[in-house]
Length: 195
Image (cartoon, rainbow, N blue to C red; front, side, top):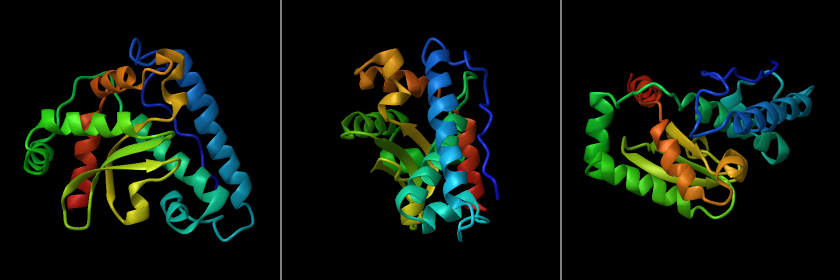
């Protein structure tokens, strides 16, 4: 199975002024594309050659894991943004209010964890095996699949996600990223895992 680089669900300049066309050209066109290319090269003629991406993430280690997980993570990240105004579904909002008390409290906790993650990595909204919404952070290429949690939303806090636009001001990037969250995508992920 050959893995392919996803098409962005928006034009390269669509996220401006929050995320620039230049950032997307590097982030998607170079970094993301590089992970896809390396993954395909590394899995050729191995037990991973015919596996789906999620299966590779759960079973591989080393370089194969790193590249597979980064493809998965970036797919999730880019699909999780839009310039169209969206809102959480009633079901999602009810769970956020149940598990975090309010949307504002959830935002504060999520962005605080993303701002505080040392080095490179990802912050996720996930559902654990007891059906509770949780915010979890992972270094490098980690993600909730490793814990059998269901991912709903992610934010990339590797420097290449924001350094062109924000330099070392990660908090500024996070506030702008929040304005781009595609709540339809997050709500759809919840609906799929609820079925």
